[in-house]
Image (cartoon, rainbow, N blue to C red; front, side, top):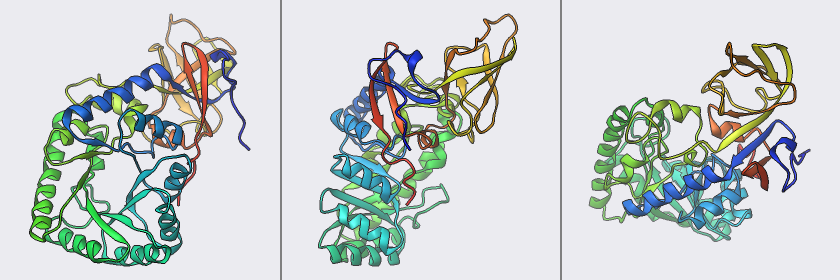
Length: 373
């Protein structure tokens, strides 16, 4: 059961809590900033929909200049296509004929791509595509230092590219070279060193694919922590940053792409909570806990109150500590929490409540919530 948390036009104090808030002014600033960088760098922007899971936001990103969306799961791709997105890359491997048939079915309505790191995956995707009479775009995912998915760079990657190019129902499009571990390294220098290693893997692979006589249209990767490095490298031509639209405390901690502070993007995603108990002047309890925000990257911060700290969270409660001599919190008062990790926090909610200047401007359904297959 999905309960609508607010009415359009209502003041923020009338939003039922806990609720997931998007502050439209910083959100739109973030959209414009990343789109402007991509234009200036001469690269394509394909934002990652695993962050927002919302076709409404995807279409806003596309209107700002993005070429489409990428996502991690077939269910996310289905939600995006149903919502009007016509160019989707599943930047992940898809295994199992039921999933591959679902993915191939989407190619009758949109341009659909998928990643491979094994010959068996290529053969299965080819069967699914030919069964439905469609063509799927194929990218070879290479290992660039993340130690997750990906075939070895160079000759092994070019051999897989040749398999894709020769497979019925598939079209070789390029390579996926995403270094997720690099996104959250502290300091731009550490991230630059990690991406330098990834760049060597990309160069080796591009050279091998060229020797095999294949064109390589797409070199995809990058995230919010490293987008500027890949975008200015002359190697990557398609950026897959996602968290930039919202930001979270994890990205605030690691520093921006040009220095110690993140200045390109602003916090636009919050969990609105209500103070439900004030057992003591220095302690308060809010009605948002583990069912409202992710904590694997740390507890949320209180927006606009450096003198109030979240000290703990249980299923339905968040514990707050008020500094001595700070203004007290009152029963019924609303507070905005900045989540530690935006992606899994979004996955806990059914709606974005979009606000501007303290009033509800729109409600956006999170239609890909829970799309884990």
